[in-house]
Image (cartoon, rainbow over all chains, first blue to last red; front, top):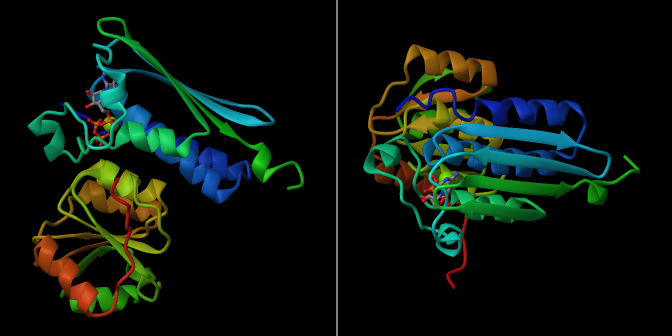
Length: 134
Length: 119
Ligand SMILES: Nc1ncnc2c1ncn2[C@@H]1O[C@H](COP(=O)(O)OP(=O)(O)OP(=O)(O)O)[C@@H](O)[C@H]1O
Ligand SMILES: [Mg+2]
């Protein structure tokens, strides 16, 4: 497996959001969540896409893949649960923390997945708290 | 604790970011699984890891971690050194294992670390 490029989009998105002048902590939260989603698509989803949309009051990220889907979402959301192979673990993934990290960092997380039908995850981050006064 | 202190305490060799020797750090995270690092939100962190790949540096970069120590004598490849320079990151290698490297830093006064509740 060659993952050398996986995670690059998040690094670029982080730079871009920082240049827009968004709050540093918010940028970090978005970057973490995006990275976890990106890595899951590379590792479990067999490749897919991540779209980032920025509006005046929120940032939304939509991840889509046509991989095997998630059979038990509750398990997948549990800290420490992972189906990652030994090979994947040797590359630094498989702590079973990615999905919980996405949930913790986003203001909302919607997962739409079915075995065999791929996975769609949408994350939303409110900008209002760091607000218009800036 | 300054980066130069970490270099001394871990008897480490620097591969990138020599210009940050006086950077001050107050917490450390030792992990080989990057999502465990992502769950660790702290400022002024040094990451100790046995993982040697681009994702280790990307994880550090996303979390604004400026100093990465590779344990067990693993030397970064030229590609990783280049990447670290672009990211403005200090990379070093220590001969100590993860346990000994963390222990030495803790003993020398670097005590900050993430603590999470058990439920
Ligand atoms: N896009 C996806 N397609 C199919 N299965 C997925 C997808 N994303 C997550 N999963 C499943 O959910 C589990 C938990 O995901 P999570 O990101 O929390 O952990 P992980 O990726 O295994 O490890 P880590 O993220 O800590 O490196 C995965 O092990 C996998 O079984
Ligand atoms: Mg994951």
